[in-house]
Length: 172
Image (tube, rainbow, N blue to C red):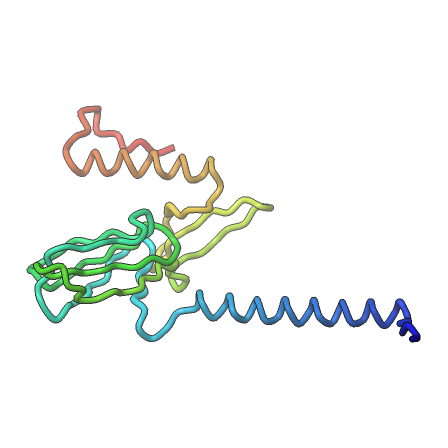
């Protein structure tokens, strides 16, 4: 019996080709599972979308409540609100606990109206509709996010009549 000896360069080429092929297959499979499909409900971050069902809903189950929120309006109408970026699902049940619909929900950023300002690795987001205003977006620079969040909270309290201060806008 004679042993077959391979050249080290051919083994290296074989391994490199195999690894590249495996990575390409995994990337394609991963992309196929996360890309939007025609049946997906796409909701923009901090916005709502209506979902009309064929019959009245008794209960709604949200796969990941940190990504989306749902409220039932008028029996067979759901209001789905995007809370943060990601993918989840909503299962609507009737009174007998039969599944009416199992809906995949993708929460995305509305790129058409958002401008990003990058300063090195720090990002600040602005909503431009048509004038640009600061907006709270997950992933923004922490100091910027906290400043905008504080100003937004003051504005919300002021608008709700909870501001008992001098009525100043709290701007900086």
